Image 1 (cartoon, protein in one colour):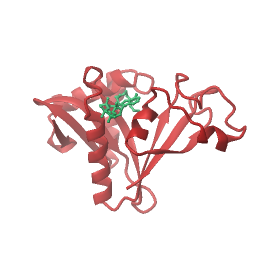
Image 2: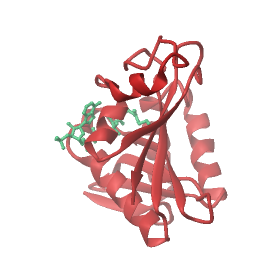
Image 3: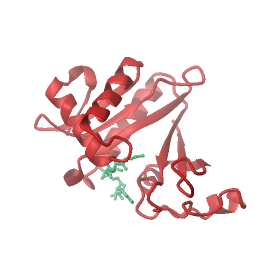
Length: 177
Ligand SMILES: CC(C)(COP(=O)(O)OP(=O)(O)OC[C@H]1O[C@@H](n2cnc3c(N)ncnc32)[C@H](O)[C@@H]1OP(=O)(O)O)[C@@H](O)C(=O)NCCC(=O)NCCS
């Protein structure tokens, strides 16, 4: 597997990345055009885009938004692996490469928001204003993407109730770099 920055990708490979993004997260990017624009905006804003490739074909992508807090805090966004290639370490390799990139630029913290739009975790469809600390302490991610990040050492550092509609929170995860 190779991990390359956007600057090393052909337009065809960038298009493959956009296709994976739209196919993997259709609620966020329902069309190829929307995913393409997201990647264009990421790069135009000074963010970072990495792609995983096998035999020159893009199998996954991961991005970093421009940092906050004087370069100390980095947001991982977006992340997707082509459906038929999941479970083979591509997501882990992309996140590790993004963490290395942020650390090399002075980052102290990586964070991300993982939307629970489909009731996959114990934080969905519950009153998050009722004893939130207890709900965070007993958080069960099920098979939601937050379980993947927790395997990589991320912890739940917050939640945005109703971010995606009533009972559909955004789950904030973070890791010290
Ligand atoms: C989340 C995603 C990027 C993971 O990529 P991946 O290449 O399948 O992940 P990896 O193979 O590197 O997995 C690393 C570890 O996490 C585990 N893991 C991966 N997805 C998991 C899930 N949904 N639930 C629980 N564990 C998971 C793997 O079993 C592996 O564990 P191991 O090291 O003990 O073997 C991929 O499933 C995906 O693209 N999902 C759709 C898009 C998405 O949800 N993006 C994140 C939005 S915040």
